[in-house]
Amino acid sequence: MTAMNDEPAAVSTRSGFVALIGAPNAGKSTLLNQLVGAKVSIVTHKVQTTRAIVRGIATHDQTQIVFIDTPGIFRPKRRLDRAMVTTAWGGARDADIVLVLIDAERGLKGDAGEILASLKDVRQPKILVLNKVDRVKREMLLELTAKANEQAEFARTFMVSALTGSGCADLLSYLAEALPHGPWYYPEDQLSDLPMRQLAAEITREKLFLRLHQELPYSSHVETEKWEEKKDGSVRIEQVIYVERDSQKKIVLGHKGETIRAIGQASREEMAGILEQKVHLFLFVKVRENWGDDPERYREMGLEYPR
Image (cartoon, rainbow, N blue to C red):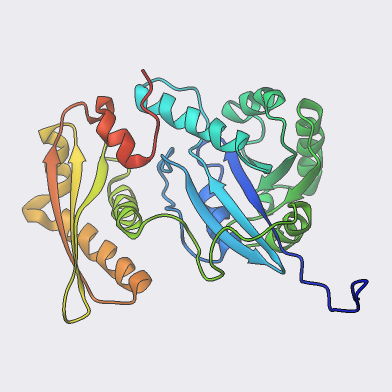
């Protein structure tokens, strides 16, 4: 097709922001990694793993889709909880399209039902995404779809398995057509806007939770304190794991330091794969009482400090 002056028409690109919201452990981070095609958000068995907003960038045809992975929405009890829930709803209201992720196995119980009731305040187009559909009978999925659409106004419903990728290509194609025309926000090969220092801290936090999700309380935090590029092409990374009590520090260290060595090895291997360079990782554990009430820690995580 040519323009009126017979010169070839410029390729029209599209771009926009798509927020993922849902209850804790609905599979938002797994879905984000699947849609982007790379690991940009950590995934653990522990609920509320994602604390701040993580952006993952996918290119589909001529569209750049910037996914916003938000913390799980739940009834907050502590200051950190309130900050995470506020951040999640803020991410939804700043997006062009909102994907509402529901765990098909759990249905509309608890937090999921409360999220649907709160969607009336979100004006952006909303897409219902039922996750883990491979574990639920079709009749139950149709019933769940009908109930969810009765409670909130959805433009479309998609049934996916974030773990296997089933249904994700259809979802990507729909979003690529639904987002507005406009220039891309990021370079074509960029997959996330998370700084490498922060991504490295998230990797270690994931390994920490995977190793100790039953023993370690929710209140732990990882910061990258030093990042030094060496002349031989390797990188030296120093990180601090913050806990709130000495008893928690002992859990993280483990007998004769076995636990922290295992966490460090798993974290170092993943960092080396992502950075494509040799990594020298040094982990330290410090006790910082009530870090959940420290405004500086919230700034480090990209969260608003709730008063």
